[in-house]
Length: 285
Length: 292
Image (cartoon, rainbow over all chains, first blue to last red; front, side, top):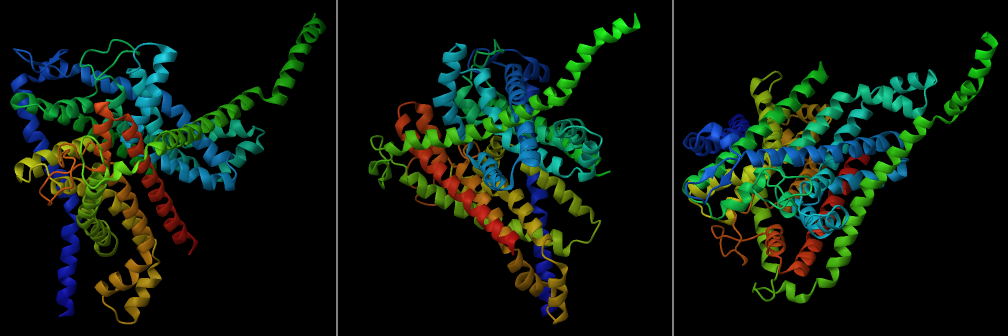
């Protein structure tokens, strides 16, 4: 009887364990099966490289190149703003921060990660948009605003991963550098950071994944015009916002094309994940 | 000539020595480090303070009426929906996540190929953006399974979304239970199952719990995955197959319509206070865990 129960529960645990495999399979199957036919109907080249998005025109054109560029631009902007600040903050957290302060700051970075994206978006809408409007001009809904907001949002990812990478560098490296007469800063920037670079790189890539997949916050500050990027202070639409904005009223081919947009986004994310795990496995060797 | 060169060189050497003494480069770097970290935490404090100060005055009792109308834009129905949604998603995700962790830590043999596959898929799942989960939920639960825009479809989508989080924290918690506990339990004649449920899980409980709490935080704050699975109906869902908006979606609708900015501030306060509580609880439990 007892042996029987053990066997059954062992089976139950195994079945539960393979649900995550099942989930990934289901997601792939349903996204690809619903999205790829649309790419065929529009024509893969016209879909990916077409520069006009006018789904309600007659004849409609479904080129998502403006949105691909939009996603890349705001992500690049977020990296330019978020990565230096994030890495320097992680240096502070791991090298300079006194212990009592650390006990406050560490939960603070976790809080930064826990704030819902809709709250970030609202904050961007009521604070950053007017700020960019008065300081830089334009109407405030722009690539720049989205980049600043996303730069803030990827900070906790970059800080967390780089901090643990910096901490995993052996103490002797640091002490050796100090013993050779280098200053603390020089030891950190010339010895420890290079030694931790693969971990820091993994953090940056994770941050890129977050930025490219972010939806609600970007919708609220980016302006969402579906056209080729026209300038840093002009609005832009990303792949993610394109889906949320138009899925509500889309039908037939339009709807299928939006799902295909999701497929493109999904493939981007898979590539990013792959890059991240390659870096991780290289680090272990 | 040689002397002349030495004499010309002298002031430069002196200047270089003073520079080295003050280590201009190091000072600049240190300044940058401090500037960047001040900026990071200033942004966080400013964000929280701004929303609390602007939002708290708008928290009126009207916003907590039981029934939503376009006049009172009450958030209470959305709060109730959020509760229902959270419970439903956790009922699915928590056992799945914990059982998966049990399989990985206690049952799977080392070098098992499936274990590697499970880890890779869990990592993939945790990297997928919420809008892609939303699309999948719409295609699979809403359309293919014909659940329609419903709490159930939303909860199922969210359950998959938080599964990797619960799984990973539970796995870490189980791994940190010392093997001597297991050996002791086997030694007094308990079977594997009894050891897992009576010895390993209770001692891993704080770690598991803090993961579950983080998952609650993600569920409550989620928007993009829910718009096209749970829908945006503003009333309390009458059953699991009817649509209902959660608090985060409520806030999105309010702020994107542009008519209810004050109410959006108030909703932001409620969301933010909730997130603060969640984070505080999670770290308190984790701290208790480590101090043991």
